[in-house]
Length: 149
Length: 64
Image 1 (tube, rainbow over the protein chains, first blue to last red):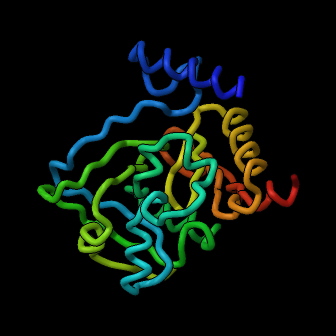
Image 2: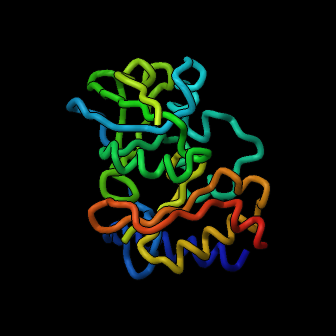
């Protein structure tokens, strides 16, 4: 507990100071700039098939798949626990999925996100990775293509 | 470099230091070895390209 409390205090200081998302004080990303999507955006997401259920699952956050109890990792940042990951670079995702199809997926869905549907996004993690917030059924309607790997 | 931990294909936490990322990854796997099956640690360079191999959570669970 002492360790967790100490970590929280360090993170709080960084948040309060408004420093960049990474700092020498807290090495993990603790600031997220979420925006309502204003322009069309193409992202790629791994999935496990072309069926409706598979695509709904792929468009669902870890929170939405309703795992109980929550995985300890999911408690690191609730904002990410409630988001869906997407990559700008299709080839990068394909390489990752080919290495770990059991984790990332056997297929790649191309998402053509459009504004005016309440979709929110944030630049998170590595360059070209985005976190997406939207209604899963709505997000599946943005899927323009699903390809086998 | 960015070190990202994914669960179920979704980013759950990322770090800019390898040791912090690995410590967190090991800690998460130790907390819940069974649930670690869906975890993946991936390193990316400054241009977002995947670096080297990635580490699945089960490898840590087996090692612990």
